[in-house]
Amino acid sequence: MRVSFLAATSLAFCLSLAAQAQTTNRLDEVLAKGVLRVGSTGDYKPFSFKASGQNDYVGLDIDLANSLAQALGVKLQVVPTTWPTLMKDFGADKFDVALSGVSISMERQKTALFSVPYMTDGKTPITRCENQAKYQTLTQINQPGVKLVVNPGGTNEKFARAKVAQAQLTVYPDNVTIFEQVANGNADLMITDAIETRLQSRLNPALCAVHPDAPFDYSEKAALLPRDLIFKAFVDQWLHQQIASGALAKNSERWLSYPWGLDSLRVLVDARLQLAPEVAKNKWNSKAPIEDLAREAQIIQGLGKQAAALGLPVAESEAFFKAQIEASKTVQREMFARWTQENQPAFDNPLELTAIRAKLDELTPKLLKALSANWAVLHDSARHRDVGRVLQPLPAAQISAAAAAQALAPLLSSR
Image 1 (cartoon, rainbow, N blue to C red):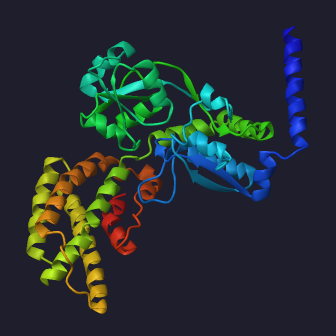
Image 2 (tube, rainbow, N blue to C red):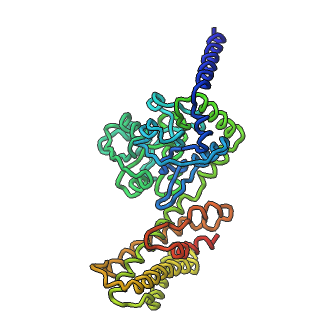
Image 3 (cartoon, one colour):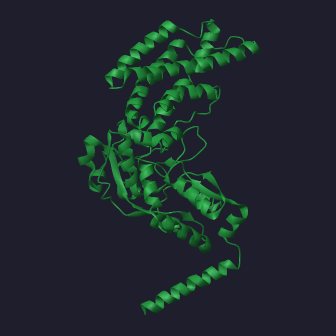
């Protein structure tokens, strides 16, 4: 009877394929268009991440998307989506496949198909390391006094509402910075996929993954697909080869050890440089010179002492901050040149120089801390390609590519 059942099931599958072959199917559509549209959220390391201001997505699932497009012989188009709108965008046919660390769920399966799974996972907590013992079980977490933070619209929120409804649940909209809520004490913990807790605990020494090898439940990661068995058969076979060849395992390890922490350093560099136009407006109004060598020397000397306290080489740290100052002056000179040509009058209510300096002083210890946290990565010759990929200048209004590259140059030359 078992053999007959399997034979019948196989026959039904083949008949279904044959029926689809007589009409249109997604595989033929993709091949005819020459483009594979892949939906991705860009906020879920190590699967899919799009840094602020950057145009490209990176991560394990983005590599998978590129590989699938190559197997099809077509171009890849990454289509932005979000966890709250994932299934709505899918239903609106905005993409052919979703690859973003998507978990298989029965709810999603009601309107879509999934490829064969490429990773097993499960929900587990991440908290500050001193609180690990307090949040080992769902019973410990499911208490009115526990502050739980969750990102909206995905399986994390669904799990939290179903399993720990008594906790104080806060839905935090930004999945990129949500872990800072836990690290800073605004929340006690987050429950998310075990692979993400492992990665985030690497990126933030204050955070610890709670029993990631024994999560609260079982889940699988897969590609989200339309209800098209011909297309699914192609994707399944391609994914089977990725798994069997060892390519997927090798790529997974690469993205788990990717220098994700460098993005925070790059963002801080960009934030400092974006204060340069305000400095320029203030100096333009007061007719003050752009360069103040005495103050610059004083600042660098103070930074050298702070760097030494963090165990950073003083000379290299000073060179890094000198580059930040020079990049800021580059922006100011470019703006002065343009304003001179345009006969720019004095600006109304520019930000006071004391307020600007306060913002710069606030950024300085953060930059030093980020520099210290990423020092080993910056000097790891095996990661040259990844470091260069992360440290791309941020395209921003009023900031030239030359100035942005000048600010990042010491980080790239240290490799």
